Length: 352
Ligand code: TXA
Ligand code: MG
Image 1: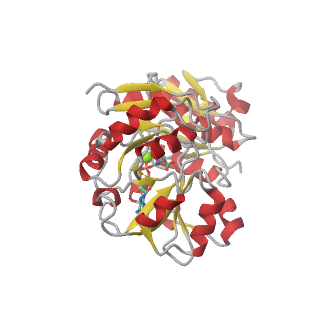
Image 2 (image 1 turned 90 degrees about the vertical axis):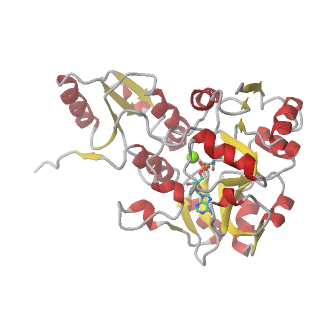
Image 3 (image 1 turned 45 degrees about the horizontal axis):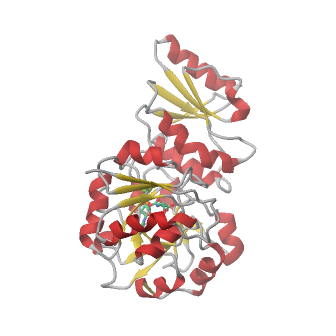
């Protein structure tokens, strides 16, 4: 298939309407799949009401059929058709964080969406992205748009159109290039069908921000422990966000990381390192990728996937990464690193 490309400069002042998106919107209405930028990562969109269209998403990504998709809307009025029993707390969250990186899980109204979107569950995740290109595309298509991240299943999510192209060129109808995405990690997935809302995937809106608005929120225990509990978001159980070489998370000093690197290099291996700007000057490896600044974790979220993905262009046998505090956006960063590394940690021995 010939993949079409459109380039959109979102900073152009035109009241959020982009004439060049007309063709992409038309393709969506014809049940084709099109990749588009959101404020978190690039999404792979299709008409959420149509089985054939949604099937094309799973096929292009190689995504397991039991992993449901998020439905994207551009207007609050689209919501009433799609979900039932919206609790007051969920409405308050929508009012506060939409448009923005929060996906809210609610009971799905039967018969409105393709059953492939929900993978047979009775809930659906809905989000209103804040990227002007995403909003204009959804408005022009005039449909609820199912969209997972626009990567091949298992690869890090795309934060540029070039990443999408790497994975999906020739497999989808089109790619809208809107430049690099902002947040850099995906939306927070929050289950609002239960008394105390549960974070099924930490993301762009933090637990602390949610709790300021609605009080107590918990994190799915399946995300924290290694194997006892099963994560409730089907997508969270797969190895994910992973570059081709194995990733190890280094719990210790920079000197310890350098020691680990040196040991591997002595054995003739090529070593990659993911480090912050603060540490970069102290690390020598075959490839060093800077993932942002430790004193501003938002910059780490923004660069993380690009850093992980860059190792697929460089030949390394192993990758060592710094770790981060699990607070604020650090929750989302560590969740993605845990998954990229398959939770492989190396601990610096305590001095005794
Ligand atoms: O930021 C984002 O959310 C991006 C952009 C494109 O909007 N989308 C995205 O979609 O990350 P995806 O499909 O890559 O991740 C959706 C996650 C998966 O872990 C999936 O299992 C979970 O949300 N999910 C979706 N619907 C669900 C449901 N009804 N119940 C439980 N988990 C659900
Ligand atoms: Mg994804």
